[in-house]
Length: 382
Image (cartoon, rainbow, N blue to C red; front, side, top):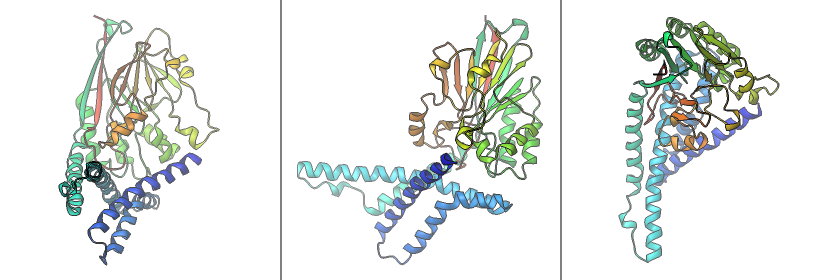
């Protein structure tokens, strides 16, 4: 619980700072305006919208929760992009002032006016959010082809489809989820895996979404592991949804698929932050339960790969990073996760693929980080 409290405090501090910066920009345009009080009130509502929508979900006010989600999270994207663009214009103005002071010349005449320093970032933010909303609905298919001596030639190509970070909830359901799953159907998977964060928020009235997943029936089955949002949504409810969607959960366990592949799945370590007493199988323990000699795939939500733990698997499938979801936030997530998005050769010779995320968390926007399903073809060595 201490970890959750720290998260909320950090969120309020950072998100509140963005709102305060936006308010200062407006006040600079009209410092004596009688409307500043209403602007401040509106910004407070924007700041607390994520918490208000969770309360609306909890009390079964679905229409209100949907409204707050769309408005509040689109505002989050606009505000973030506005503040980034506005900060760049402020840095440009500051550099002119600094250069002028250093060379004793007046350069501030080259700086944009206060109105331009507000309007230009706002236009950029609105345009980027509009494009990102469009991009978030266009799932890209990333294809990998892996040859291995551990795949018998008679097994033929085995097509694995990976989804990750779908975040089924208030925003990702209905027609939007239908469009997303249409791409999964088109990929014609032999095996479907979900590498965490299948769900998001409250899980009431999600029977339709579970049925949409359950309609996908690959010949070799469907498997899933937990992500951090399974715990935020409520672990028992999230597990029930995942099972109703037709997935077999791997929680520190191994499963043999078609006598050819060993699938190993581990729980996301977020559970330790929420309940330190909960037992959690390590990767080594989970991998030790897999039959030796077969092609082994490790399903793990967060794309960490410590060198002293790289043993016993041939392919790791992960997600979590969303590739930042909204550029330039990706610059921060890249620092936190060196294995950020795409495929990486690990020191043990295994391959790690980090899915960019199939859905969205928070804003229904993906700017320069399009959603992804991954299609992996396993073949015998030539």
